[in-house]
Image (cartoon, rainbow, N blue to C red; front, side):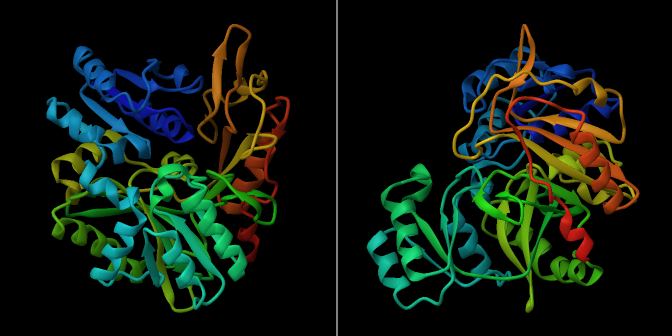
Length: 423
């Protein structure tokens, strides 16, 4: 069969690597892809938001299955347009992708269906938000309502910081139209855990847990990024936590979306905070996480095509989702200066060391193929992933593998997975 993947990051490279393992797949295309994806798929120069061109390409090439990796095209309704053209596609429709597309919607959904989350208020007017803050308990969390590349969240320790945050989001529009509406949320403390799941509209199958590192610098300092590294599984995601989430969060979310007339087919990403009062939902995403996919998918035993088709057809209850009894750690190699400003176009050396390995992976995010070779083309350049019998071994392997890669202005955090030592 022919498979089309929509996206261009490390997540899409991880998806493509999983798709390439399926014996059912003869040909993989990716729009627009990147240099790493181009080694296992044919990259087509169509942007992820060029819906008409994607639909036309899929029809011309008789694509059997399209997997939409990115949030923007999902929230924008690419799945709806492809389905309207008679094409088979994996991912939520627009009315279900709103689970990620609007934080205000997701918070209201959780309140309505008693799904545990932080207390909050939604605001369309910056002046009303400023008035509310005068009596709010600090610290607080400010969230731009729409998509902001994982960066539209501000944690404010003081009233003055919070007021400045309102101006940043709603008046200065630092995150664009995503800040037309804003959520002000109580600040929760505890361990963060990411849990990805497959959903077919009514049945949910939970993937292995993971933990992302969002801050740019060691010690969780610096600006928020799209993710500087991750590990899987999380030692803090215990059987007790799993049992609570299955009873109060996972199936409850799927049922809530169905009850709202928004049946969800695809991947729901649960961002959880393990508080003293139990697990709470921080956020939902409507697709694989990035870089969570880079540590979860390499450990999945199932054929991703079979699972994706079960999600589309409503037969996920027949799938026994299984993961390897090991661990994986991903360290992101970024460009110095990310996420603010950085240079591109530097030649990358050492990529050949990863070819053909089942234990070491180098997932491309911001790369480009040139006549001189593969060069840097983004803030997050590569995701170096390694497996190990446990998290400590996987972490040691991942950091050793980062030494295989060199390029000018290479930057990474040196404490990805350090929390493992505290478990």
